[in-house]
Image 1 (tube, rainbow, N blue to C red):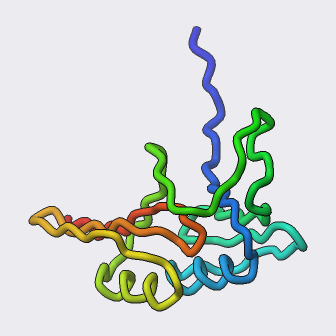
Image 2: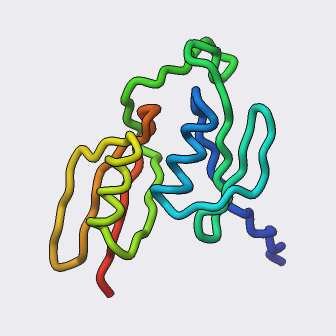
Length: 130
């Protein structure tokens, strides 16, 4: 007999060094809404996903293994993709709000913009044609 495992709810946590700036960036660039405010943590809703912004100083231990946080641009094979309706407007918002757009690809499938927030965290904006 197979036992059903309850489905996990996905939420995203992003470490940032400036909680106010990060909250403004993700609300304005992605249309998020602020759900909860704490001194060291804000929770946003971006679509159906909870986005947790966690205030962490640069240089602090990130994992308990001696790996320290850095807010220089970095890459990870696990990253965030945000589906947007208007890629050009979303790209303009990212740049206007202090993020970086590092590349943009278009094809018959739609478009993808490769971006970084003001803290060096990478993410993609996707506009997929149906």
